[in-house]
Every structure is written in C-alpha cells, then in structure tokens.
Image (cartoon, rainbow, N blue to C red; front, side, top):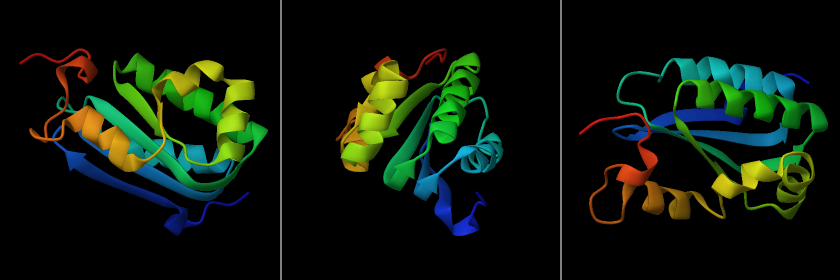
Length: 134
C-alpha cells in the first residue's frame, strides 16, 4: 500500500498537543510515514499525541501491528497517546487486536481535545501531561 501525502495531516493544536489525522485505508506504510511526521514535532513541551482515525475506512491487520508499534514508540518517550475512532469497523478491529488501545479512545476530535486541553484553559490537563513539570 502506498501512502498518499494527503492522507496524513499533522499539526500542533495547543502547547504540548500534536494532532495527527489519517484518512482512507490505514496500513503499515501509513504508520511509518506518520511516525516520520511525528518526529518533526517531538520536543520538550510535547506531552500528548492525538491520533485521529475518524477518516480511516479500513484498518488492516498490518496497520494494527504498526499502530501497536507506534503506541510503544510514544510510550518510550513518556507521551500520552489518545485515539479518535468514530467508525465501528475501525473500533472493532482495534478491539479484537489491541483492546487496551481503546482505553485512550474518543468518539470525536472535539471530545478528545476538550478533555485534554480543558474547555476553558486551552492548555493540556495536568492528568495527561506525563513526565512534565510546571
């Protein structure tokens, strides 16, 4: 599977929060490209990565293995990883292959960001800024 450059969008939402969105069919090449894009945003202030899968139509088994690898990569850097999954098919694939990943899943990007950044403050919640100091 080839990665369409338009299928991955990455931007810094708030201080300490990066949102990465995938679209279409997600396979291993997408997660390799995604990890490469994410490395551009890793710095001392980064605390949370939001992986938005709401536009993913199919999450292949190879894509699941790549997602698990990404979870390990983010974890080694002591970052929080939050997932946005609004498709039953994608949620079911994650549930079957990596049920623990659903503990950090949200039904929409708005829900995830409101919880992470706080509706009034706009800054990452203290509960989600692992390994950072005030």
